[in-house]
Length: 485
Image (cartoon, rainbow, N blue to C red; front, side):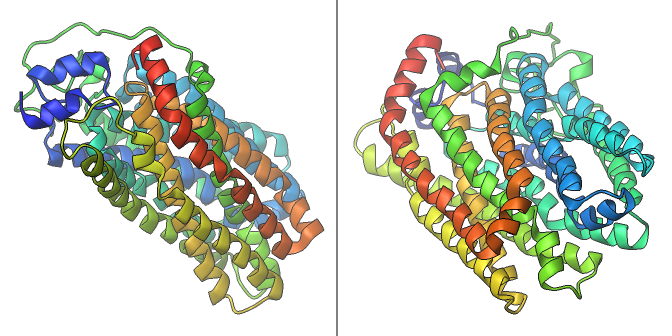
């Protein structure tokens, strides 16, 4: 057994089955280039969850006008979208852990495309139908992020997972960067209905690409990639893994359907989900109100220009996603070398420390950017200042969420889609509550004190970082003894 495989066999995030597997063959047959290809495909699919949400923001004032509703009622369509964004992955993610990643990915995109047709044809006197179809749109788009995270858990080892997860998140984070720009431009030139026709065509095209190229990666079906799954689980065009994949067919081995809510009974995972959810909620408190706040503070901006303002926060998230993954892998190796320089790595490896010890610094910058942004808007300073600060909000929110999401995947190997679905449930629930109440809070406190309040939520949540680092190893040992995870 090679030195690398020896390290893998003692990795704290590897299940007993995986340990036996790594003694005779690699964790994954895919080359690094093949892994990047698969990650790129899933990132493209994961783009549609935030894109479907953020492309909508610049059109909120227009929708309020054409539907003859208040901004608060139109914001309710955002709230209900985020709520279903949290609920839907609990269904799709658990099915993906049992039936396979590929078929669930394709089904989600087909549902998204169909719901967008209905939204594009919604009459302006049926506000209830707008709400209703937004639920189906969220159900189709939201689960793609959870499914993509499951794929990464299938094909990557812990030492490289942070880097792949960071680059994978570039896809979902392109949504906040380009979505509002596209939405503002479409709404300004072709009308608000064109937003949904664009999503319909783009999601259908993505579904076709995944049908053609995406291999099945679920380890209970495809193993480490060397097992050829049944016909419907195979890509039409085999691009990766074809040279090392076994030539024999095997019958589909499904894992039994397991309740994803059981993961919430693990204290370390629940605390991580809560911390991640609060960071995400504060992010949505900023991004969901950009169009209305900037419209009030800088009234000369049209819808296209309002959409362009979102490039700042989306660009910050793109940079944060691309860089934080590399930093995570670098710090993981630093901790590993410092602790195991003279002995082999074993189950006592402090994975929580390796993933979270930089979080207090990142959180401090996140809090500062959020509070300063509110006061810049309050004082009506040059638009350059709040745009620079929302770049920081995007960067540090992504860095924080990437670290916690990678650790969550490390803690429950083989259940990547389910635990990511739980993550979506918690963070989308908190974010939906934030979107629902952000306008009344802004009206009562004005932007300055509103974003000081939001920054204070992050400060209050900061001790959770140290709680997880303290109780994590004990919780992990108990979970392994109880379930083998």
